[in-house]
Length: 113
Length: 299
Image 1 (cartoon, helix red, strand yellow):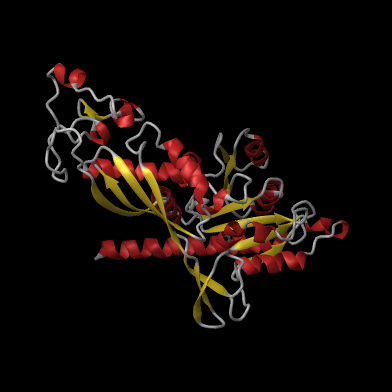
Image 2 (cartoon, rainbow over the protein chains, first blue to last red):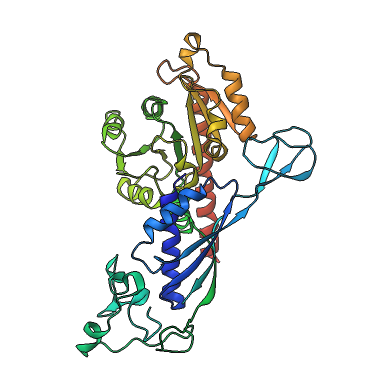
């Protein structure tokens, strides 16, 4: 959706960590991106390259950890895989599904020096 | 920060003040051309102390000092923090705030104008208008007598909580009032950005497709209320309103749907009642919070 803002958010978090943890260069960045988070991974990679240019993360490798979409089907009372928000329950066909996972947009870890 | 001597980088300061903006990185750009002479030669600045977290101080090139740092922070944490601050301010003042989201041309501004005209005798109303360019919408709102602040996002595709916080500061809405935030016409990006509002309201006009909630599920998922607008045009269109409602419920089983026509006024009563109920609840929770606070103070 707004991958440029997300990439800028990632860089801000990295800069704050650089100040508090004392590092000058980022080698690898691990992001957790949920299947239902509405972020396009390839667009995010492109934007990350653009916003980190000239920064302490300019040479950083971006690693994306996929988090699957999950929901609780109220009819079946069980957890099901949800690939899209309009998906029906694969068991009963109901749309009464409460999303319980897959909305992560998270900076997980950095390899720094 | 330089791991060779601790200079520059994220912690760089001049006369105790942090360097702002891209300047901070000029010294270390691309991590190659790293000269110490200008900063240290003058002898005015003592070298920065080594932070405790830094690995052993080694000047030898080629020795890697790589290490792992766990962050575990949401990427939108900054926006969410601003949104929290906005929400706290609005709750403290008992203000009911709505974030109106839709594609361009769904009739948001006309709906706002009609809403203000119908409610202005009963409520104090302020409006934040978001558009990439022009203050045409704010002008339309001001013509009704309601104060409006226009945010131009320039190239941005959504309002964020920081922009809205500043706009609220300028508007200075009254205690117990209604704050209407008209987001940039875009069914994608505004879904991810909390502004501190009580509810997102999605507006879908019947001149669009019934499958919009399926095509843009994030937005209809994030909204608590959907207004199906321009319903006066239904007789002239092949738009299946029931199907549009069903599609919205597929992505968001809890969404409430009201059918309206801002231009004819049909269905607006239910929308206005919904707003008035929200306003009275916000004002009550404000009173309750104030009562609790004074109770604590009395003890």
